Image 1: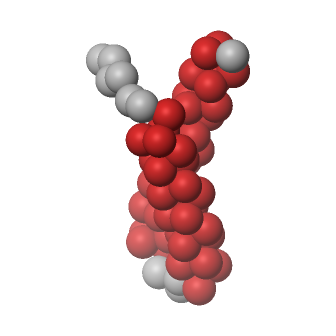
Image 2 (image 1 turned 45 degrees about the vertical axis):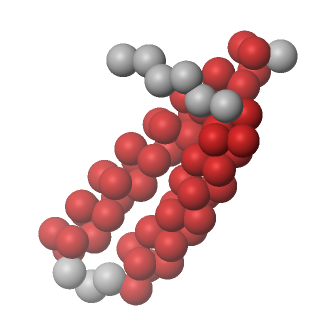
Image 3 (image 1 turned 180 degrees about the vertical axis):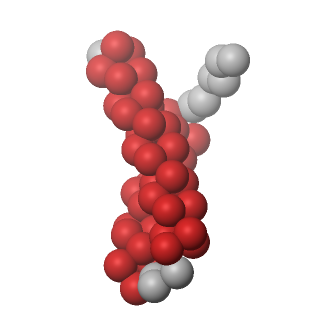
Amino acid sequence: MQIELTMKEKQYLENMLMHHMRELSREISHTDNRSFKENLKEEAEVLRVLQSKLEQERAMSH
């Protein structure tokens, strides 16, 4: 699957990912429920992969 984004859209998406990753980190550290914590960690990993893909795309476009 490929999605074409404008530079502004990419920047917005990157900012949203970073914000959500920070929120997840806080939530993970404050969560005692092991199952919920694992779900949050999985979500954080998906966000890290997305962020990495965006960074790779940016590097290739320069």
